[in-house]
Length: 84
Image (cartoon, rainbow, N blue to C red; front, side):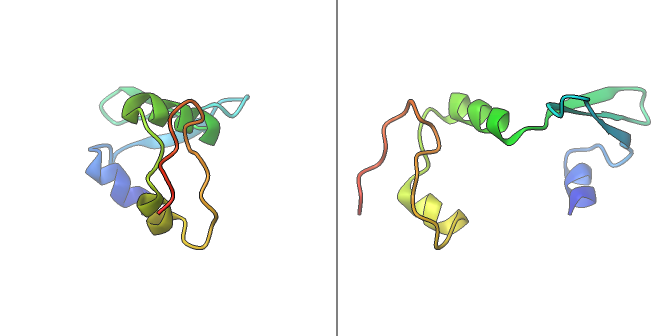
């Protein structure tokens, strides 16, 4: 799946992935000479997601992606959707 994701992003030739010593960043060299860097911690990814969407997951989204798990706010500073 990771290889498929790389191809979809146009980086199938990405090689030598490295994780920073503090575990916060993932870097990868590419055949075209570029280096791509991604956030690697779940907490920081969640923070970036909340900055981009400006809302919590809906309860329907939560049920779809986290079946059987009790709902919880994904963006602590955003309104929580009403219960169904």
